Image 1: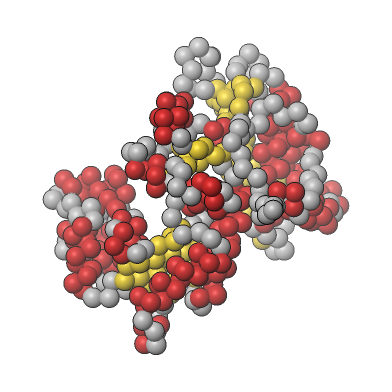
Image 2 (image 1 turned 90 degrees about the horizontal axis):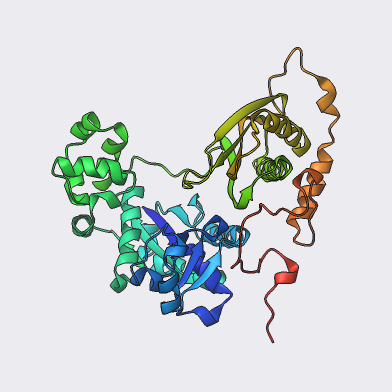
Length: 420
């Protein structure tokens, strides 16, 4: 048996956690630069406001219904996610963190000793008590069915946030209610092709011939069919796969017109990316930088370009990458354009301790002191203060617009909630 625990309206719930006055108020969380809606509370969903809609098109509706907007507060969301996952790891021995707000639990053998429906309620209540966030729980013999069980727990209020598929009859009943595009691993494109051959519901897919599905689509769809019929093909992945690349990309709050501002932005994104690289306990060799104007503007001249550079030896020292990024920028920068977005991608990862050396490599990089990066990370993650590189600049007029940013309640001392 597998359980899938999924936080309800995660970003919106995180914002509401420290604002009990907004318990029944419609809430939306906005994307970078407060541009589009990326999360909605249940009240907003009831108003039929869709994901990814631009905020400027909804001003009237937002005012009419008293919708409260929040800028994305990723440090807050990441910290609360970690607390949820720690709570789940206290309840089950094997946990796979699937995303920031979802986790699979392996419940093999649990059914011999406890009532799994009662255990699902225990999970739901414990997370709510320990962290303050609402979750739904789906339990089933396979991960794909657990996903659908969780979907059912969210869709139908009578379930009280818990669905346990403990019999073929219950599985069949739920599959008949769910459209095929809601099945984990299917998606929109494949669901349209499935519709073309008469497969509309999850039950239709479960009744399909697995070998025929493999021939028409892929081995993954064959496994999905088997999973829908109760045969587990997907194991729990307790150790996350090592990332193959790290991307830091942002749209500017204002158009960037001069080289110096663009250099500061590129260096700032590089700093963030290398911080993430060190968190992954990896070194890297390759950096790609990109910049572009807005493709939506009919008044601006269009230009987009990217360039890749490589270090001689793998590094996790921010200085190595900011220096290389600055050199690369000079090669693709063009004056006279109104730049709307830039990005940095780090790739070609290596273990921090072991990597293949180059016979002709330059040893000057070896004089870098890794303790400096360690101290910088400790300061910047302490929530007490922050140390920046000069290359990032001071004014940062290009930085993200975050007009509705909430405090860092759990990661910054000065933002701790006060109770009077």
